[in-house]
Structure formats: C-alpha cells, structure tokens
Length: 255
Picture 1 (cartoon, rainbow, N blue to C red):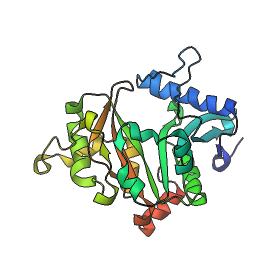
Picture 2: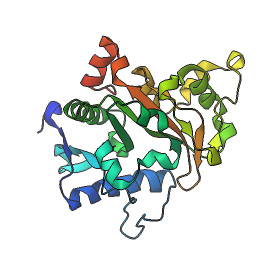
Picture 3: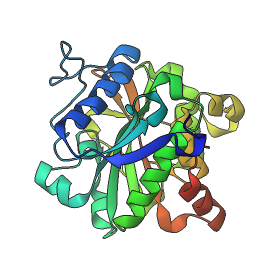
Picture 4: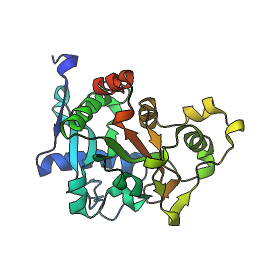
C-alpha cells in the first residue's frame, strides 16, 4: 500500500503521450462537465486542446496508487514561450499592457483542473506544491491567468463579480482590462448593498485560493460563449505575499 505522503507525484510532461493524457482530463472537465468547445477540440479522441498547447509547459499530477494516472494538470507559459506563440493566451481576452510594461518576470497559468474523484483532498495541494517549485525555479514574480465562473448569464453572477470588483481589484500598475469588444463590467451591484457573505459563497474555490494569497482581479470580465464561462483575470504579485501567505503558498494553499 502506498503511503498518503508519497501517493502523488508532480512532473512536467515530457512526451506527447503525457500531454494527451492531460488533454484527455481537460476534456472530461471542460467539455463533459462544463460544456466547452473549441476549433481544435477532438471529440472523437476526447482531447481538449488548442493552438497554444505546444508552447505551454504542462504540470502534471499523477496518482501512484491509481496506476500512475494523470489526475491533475496546470498549463504554464513563460514570456519566452509566449514570444514564440506570438502572444499570451489571455491576450485574446485581456489587454496585458500593464503586466508587459512592469518589467517583472511573468508566468501565465491556465487550464487548471483535477479529476472529479480527487477534488476536496490532497491532490490539488500537491499540484500547488509543484507550481510553487516551478515559480521558484524560474524566478517568477507575477502570476496571472483567466479563471472561470460556469455559465454566461452575467446577471446570475452579479453578486460574486461585484464582490471581486469592490474588494479585490488589482492595483493600477497591474490592472489588466478586458478587451473593449467584449468588455463586461464587474460592478453590477453597489458595494453598500452587496451581501458579501453570500457573494463569496458563489466564488469558485480556485479563485478563493488566489484571493487568500493576496491575489486580485483585472478590470471587467470576458464572457466566453464557446467555453460556456464568464472569465476574470487573476493577478498575483509574489512580492506582496506576507510571510504567512508565502508559507501557505509554498506548503500548498489548497490543503
């Protein structure tokens, strides 16, 4: 029997088969569960993929006790890889000019998911440990990426979106903005009448984790009808982490 402490292992995908295993898990989550789609999604092979996959590092979580199956994934894009891709993935939705002008070492995060049976346990904790090690190894200073609310009915999401705007808006020097053609304001409910407790209950767990670490959001949301989501851009400046927050992050914030 494998001890809990050694049950999971984290690695960077090093071959096509491992990347496809990650894409297969993404299909289960983003297509089967959330109803997403895209021009390069392979429904016959059940692979969720896009044109950016060759440029991202794929951080993989495996379960040794489950036949070494891929049970978690994060996509990671450093600036040099984004240059080869021609842009960051998020730039289809957000103007990243403040981040590009900051002179800081950036890392874009995306396609984070964990297989359904592993949610709520140690799996995401281990995945975050792997992410923290990657950030340290590559000297990353600012992490960012789009995070999603399920669905495209903005009024149904008015409370949590308004909470993010009023309480967690990024400082001006890091405040990316949703592209004007698809700009959706976040401040749908005035702060003085917002039920903050109820609103926070509607914020996805991953977004809450970033907020607990001092993460913040850009201005405006992007309604992604192809993926059946409403997206916000999360930004986290590692220099702003307190000692307590930094300890939680390097231990794995999701524990």
